[in-house]
Length: 464
Image 1 (tube, rainbow, N blue to C red):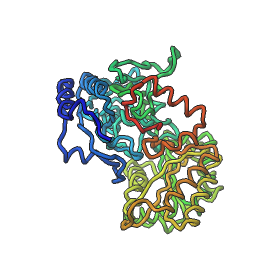
Image 2: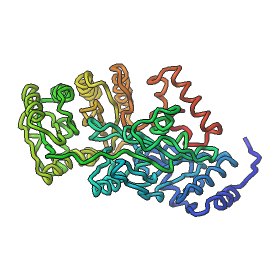
Image 3: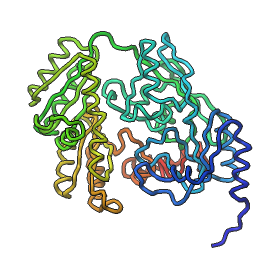
Image 4: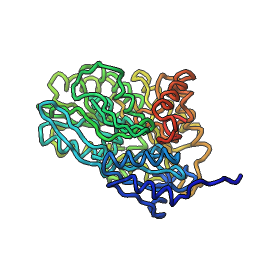
């Protein structure tokens, strides 16, 4: 059907440029093509965005939204674009609004144990700076070195330390957010307790840019623990046995700060990638850390590991050796991804169901004749099965789609979730009703309509 066009793209871009006082408006086709699709090359966009705007100030953000409202243009917020669920790649004829250049640490306050940062500050950089004050920033997603605090807040990112310190939401005390109508609002405080009004801060954490654009984050910092941190490795006959040990350690009072699981196939891939020989030990690897441990915590952990079949236990307090062990977990993804095309998933189940979930993933792999490499943050019940298939295959094989459906529904049946820490994005929003139910699904849409009645903020993401 023919349309009666009121405004040309050139007119829209001129209006946008007039409304963005300090940021950069990019319309170069080559650059726009780079932000068109998912980071894995999954083509979800049906056309190029109109512009990529690199905001430097709040006024730039407000200007983008002013033009977007005027011409009904979708706005896709992003910082470092590390989403694994197509959360920040382009929508056709949209504005990509990047806050990566808003990357200043405004304050680190040792007495209050807080930091105030712009959304583009890299997680690792904040942690490094906080340590100069005897503090540290706890959230540590696998993308810690390249992902931003604003992006982590938008997705409620998790990580290895979640088992002790919680996910990003547990470290966010306050936010500043620009709403779809252009208002900048301040949410939360810099105090650990705050009971006034509805908790809008936590509503925006994990909202994936669908309710507003984060312009400032106030986060909680922790003092660096006294004493020696103990890092170690233990091996088990399979992931089910490992999961049973992890569940018991979590309930022991030892308060581990890392309990990471890698199945046999993942360890083999890691050996190939690193030139190591860990797969000779057993069928699953546990990487653990105890912050500021004492003899009772250490002995209790050792006893549980031995009782549950843990073998070849190796513990160290040497920082260099501990870093090498931690790096094994960090290198797990490139080691697995090197084996072909892949999709890495993100489910979480109650700790009591972790062993059953691990066992089920292995059965799905056998049933559908798939390569599934399973690792994850076992200490908080979060598993990341990665399915690998031939690099020569076009599209996603039917068996992969079937495996995802089976694993998702099993996680839900066990009382879990199909998104522990990677958010929903565009890849999982068809599952909203199945995970949340009819009534909550409707409330989600009502909240979206309240904050963004024109549906211009990251449409088709989080909810659909």
